[in-house]
Structures are given as structure tokens and as C-alpha cells.
Image (cartoon, rainbow, N blue to C red; front, side, top):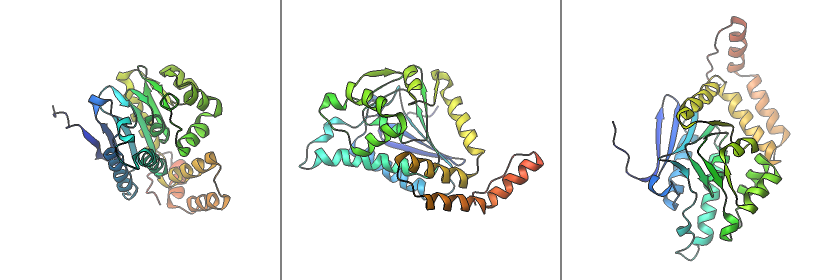
Length: 260
């Protein structure tokens, strides 16, 4: 059995086209320090530049997914009160902007800014023992704009108001009903459910998956340009992947996509 890794910045593992990024401060509920945000940004940039990576799974070590940004790092320097939240916003935006599909493996509860980190992923799989709490109002904090946008665009205005303004602790079953979670499972079924989503994504054509992810996110933000969507549509229409998909359908076999 391998020894547990030394607590610290998030750990990146690559295996067979799948990246797993693990938050790595279990004794402190995987709270995110400034150095963790910088490490996440470096990992996201590396993944964006590596065409061999087809999927990212984001998860946490220990019993909690993440308790959010380390509140002690909101101050301590002249500009830290704004620098910390600004860096957090930039980090979550970088995750959302990744072209490859992303799955958040919520191994436990999610609080504070980590709720937005999970929302930036394409899919969220949670365990029945988890809960969510967004305590910004109880801290006197006005949340950063892109986080508010993600909440409203993904969950709707009423749910966003409930989570931000009431600062309630919301149990897992309600999170599924609200649409925050895509799948909810017992803890011992978490890996199998994440693998099922990974397998479904692996069966898709990478060019189409990445193009439609970008287009759907732009539509949700109300920032899309029809010309850009048409360009992605045309790129897929002229791709070798489409020809392979049609051939595989006709021959009743699994397709072998190349991503071009």
C-alpha cells in the first residue's frame, strides 16, 4: 500500500488519457490557499496544452471535497483582501474554460468558494453523506461576479438566491433535486459512477465534445456569437471523426475517433 502523500498543493495524476486532480489538505478539509490556486492554474494550463488528455476528474482527499478559500488569507498584505478573491475567480474561470470534459468527484461536503469550483466542471457526482453551504453573506462578503453568473446560469435565480442569501446547509438529496448534482450515490459507489460518466465521454468524438461544450457554455452565459457556433459546426461536418462515426454506425461497430 502506498503511503499517503504529504499534505500540500493539489496533486495531478495522468493515466491513459485521464487526468485526476486531487485537493490535498485533508486535515483542513482541503481548504485552498493562495499557493493551491496558483498550482491549480499551472495544472489547468498544462492540461489545456496536452492533446493526449481527454478527461479531467477533480476530487478531494479525505472525507471532505473542499471547504473553500482559506479565510485567513483574505488579509495580511495591503492588497490581499482583493487579491485572494480575484485569484480564486481567475482559477475557477480557468477550469470552466478548459476544452476537455471535466467531472467533479465530490467525495464529501463542499463549502464556500469550492461550490463554484465544482460548478465550473461539466458534471458533478456526489455522495449521500455530503452537504453544501455558501456562507458569503454570513462573512460580509459580496461574491465575485463570475461565480454569481455560474450559479444563476446553471441553477437559476431562485436557487442562487437561496444558497447565497440564506446561507443554508443543503443536504445531498436536495442538491440533486436542485440540479447542483448530476448523480448522487452511496460513498462505495462513487468511483463506479464517475467511471460510467468517463466511459460515456470516451465514446464521444473529441472534436464534437469540445466544440459543443464551448458552445453550450457560451449560450448559458448569453455571450455566444452565431458565427463561432457555425464555425464549430462546420469543423465537425468536415472532420474525419464524422466520417468514422458514420462508417461505424453503418458497420454496427464502436467508432475509433481520432479527434480531427
